Image (tube, rainbow, N blue to C red):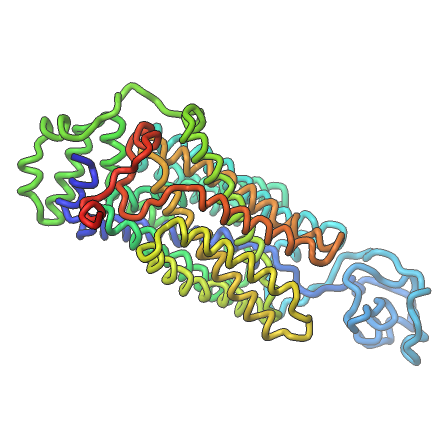
Length: 536
């Protein structure tokens, strides 16, 4: 008997499983909020040198504010005021006749900046003047956050496999909550950057463990629905973020607001079950029997568990040695695990790099920042629905590979669309974003199904680390346009195609039971479900 057989007898998608999923929704809400938060808290509104404190005598003081701007700040080619330069001395002749200002001596802003507060009341840029020479620090906040996510994935992947899903999840909840709220009270940029690092560190555990806990409590035929269709929470909350940011446009209040759902998540944690699958795989049969009995009671299948007592459960289900401890080294000790680790790591790096390369560039549609973010979230909904149906119709492998190839194809097509064909660029770009979401969203479930229970969180954690490296690298790739305008697109295309080819080398997991041990992965023939056997 396999563990999936027990779940099927207990109603693999009953009230118990639905309740477990709902108990994690509040905490999962914070994931897209924080991951895409930099689009709003690090936004740079239009700005120019502050000239309010300048005193060039009576002639200057008698000018209106608009006239002072004309004589003090040079105008750029697009007609806007320079953001970082001002004239060394007032150029009064510009009031009479606009002439060539390229030969006029300019200096960097001497007294700070004036910001347009029409869209944002306060951002990191306006709070600490992270513009011009310091604009790199403003962009670094996202990289620092995702470095925290990357390291957190490695740590929580190990903790989850070593000490259990539920305990590790509580640690991630508390870590994210404490550092998330504290960062809203940062007094300087260095303090904020450090606190954002630890916030990302904690949030990575929530992303990893909640996916595993959802998948490990449902039977084979419901894994697709749980892994993809119920994953709509990411897309919905991504579209909700600009609504929240529109009404809370001060960065400190916004950080606190998007962190607050974690308080409800901590309360809900008390009713979350531990993964019975993990308990059995680690030799904790008595605790597993307790949660399975609870599941049977909620789902109305008490009679089955009455027959499957503790002694029978110990004999029927293959149990791992409780004293054996697994680590990341086990990912590369055996040949098939080594191959699996290399291929899935490649897919994660490329999928995350292309997805966030698009998601963190919210100027691509050329419309209002809030509308752009809403479009980015809304367009992910059809992507999730597409993956839900294709996973069952054509399988995990072809869906994953196909969406990667289509992402690269859309980027390739956009390279050859003229700049004056804005609507066509927007349409193809939106399709690319949709396929990138489909690829990045589906890789979570696919990877979870590929790794054995005893190493599932270590394996997914390793992939998550590579994914976050891809996230951190994507802004750097975008800067390659200074070398050649099309170079970033070419790099993203190559990454998408590499991910697609790597996926084709992985095994199919549709209608296949989750592997429990390393030996299950090393065997050449995966274990099929009864439904699949009947079709042979």
